[in-house]
Length: 107
Image (cartoon, rainbow, N blue to C red; front, side, top):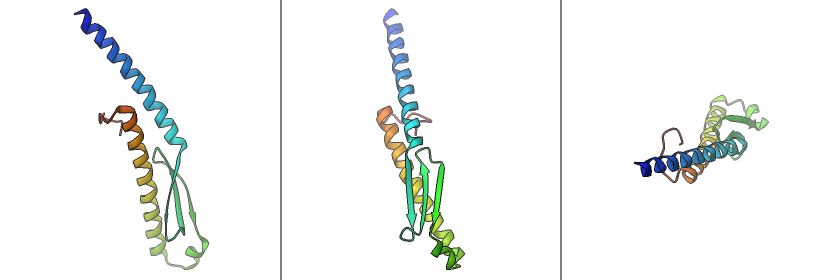
């Protein structure tokens, strides 16, 4: 019985260590910015590793063209690309911490 309590203590220490590592990785991801672009760079959107919007740049020539539909498509495409990059980085970072265990709330 004493052996199983020792194993539990070790497991708890390991879980706390993993929790600290996850917090550190998440903090680092929030500082990292990923950019998606569309239309040859006419529209650029930046998100951070936490998948939060950081900024947008729209080339003035796209706006002058007066094609709102095209601009909407470019913004959507750039956003999808930026979020995909952030999601891939987040998944890779969490896999490194959790060892690929697929823990709920860590992906």
